[in-house]
Image 1 (cartoon, rainbow, N blue to C red):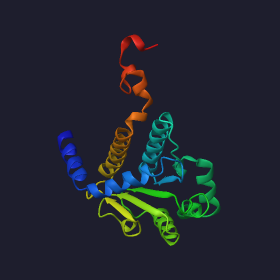
Image 2: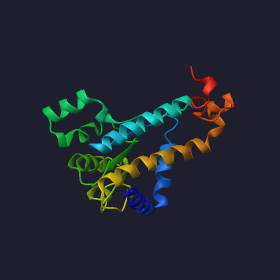
Image 3: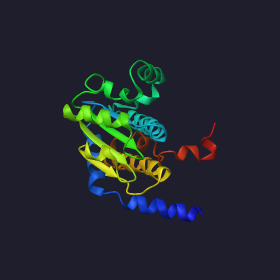
Image 4: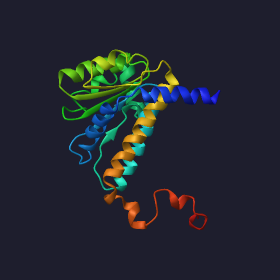
Length: 205
């Protein structure tokens, strides 16, 4: 059965357009100087993936002395519950547009269906302010793909497969970014490949 799941994942990954991944790469790369911020928004498993991605990218590029400002606003549970309680859950992200999310920023939406109302409301508001937006969604891409500048469509009708692809996409993008600027990689100074020190027995405390 695992082979069937693996085959499904291969099909889903094969449906993603390389040119749109290249745009995602470029939009993140241009913000490695701290000139503007990146906001990754999602719900449920997509919110958990956003947290993973933000933590991963923040650590990696902080070590490389680069000024990446990347945020997942669902990590702030006090804000999330207050906004949902005092406003409406469907307004939790759109209320940040034009305030915490500025015109020169990048918004990335993670969604299995592409139809989450809080993401749609945010995308509509951000579109009016000409904020650059990218979506990563599964199934038929959902409404979100029609609102953003660059839709990355995982053309496969499965929620878990879609969420798997979200992480794979960002792991791929991060590795490509590191590869391009590897001359600035602090691990090179130690003459040990990244993570190798964790698997060399005599270096484990």
